[in-house]
Length: 197
Image 1: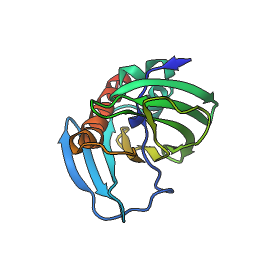
Image 2: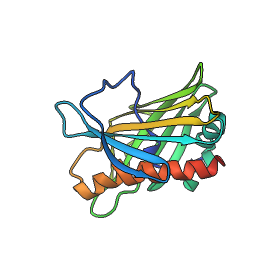
Image 3: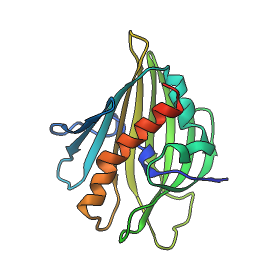
């Protein structure tokens, strides 16, 4: 089964990635804040999106697992295929559409759904295998991430969405900025609408 999707579903797990340096606020608009952080000994940057949604976390998770509706909220999606679908985890093949002159990127991502005392954490990590390489598309071999949902005392849900991945090859700075700032911002706004928060 093929569906449309985008790489920016992913964020990175605090268990996988150590905190490095200071977060820099890059955008604060419509209730969503986007931060970036330089990684140690690397040119890569990670992003963190933070928001409070006026709905239970279960409503948000339902959107994230509605495989037929990813095209409604994912940024720069191209194509995806569900490879494994189980209660506590799934595996997705995803291709992201990059603007010319860049080649599209794809990745095989495994997601683990773990309940916490006040919500849920979804941990994500790129996997090898499952899907052959595609002509004209660069495979991301390193990507890790997480969604963290925490139920607040006021009934709202705090959402923290982070991502770090190595896209490989040369990508212009303006394209990188799209995926570090604009992409996650638009993604959270669309998820909020889909979850009716």
